[in-house]
Amino acid sequence: MLIGYARVSSNDQNLDLQTDALKKAGCTKIFSDKISGMGKKRPGLDEVLSHLRTGDTFVIWKLDRLGRNLKELISMVGKFDKEGIHFQSTTDGIDTTTPVGRFFFHVMASLAQMERELLIERTKAGLAAAKKRGRVGGRKRLMTPSKVEAAKKLLAQGMPPKEVANNLGVSIPTLYRWCPASDNTRSLLELDIV
Image (cartoon, rainbow, N blue to C red):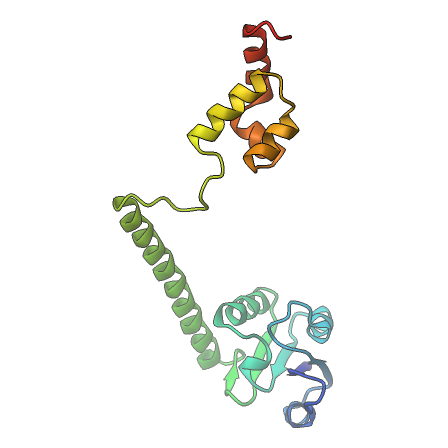
């Protein structure tokens, strides 16, 4: 069974061009969305995906109607392949029921994989170069060594943890991460405060 999907980005756009092309391609059912492709929730797409069965062919008018990026497209078509569902894009001339169509998607999947690996490689190289220059990734730490020392002293003097955290401008969990409660109890015992 040929099942179609059409999407436009806003309510004031018209689906007629796509639905006409999908009917011409032989689709017996057509689902649609009037929503941006960037959104995670696409009810029409969710509905068509729930209707697809092994042996069905999922048909779209153009690749960009299904997903905004190559990774998303490859992932979805890969899932179709595992479930025995074929894929067609009428405008782009892609049809995974043919050897050329399958080859095209394998090439696209290989390119996407290579891009992911190159991105990881570039990221690692950038982090290594930054580390050589003495830069450490991540957010700047709120608790400096002097703040940790001050917090330990204030806690040892009996100041409530909430006040210590407020004075240092940190949350109570951050305070306890750097000055665990077990350490504070030990410090209080050493000073004979408890």
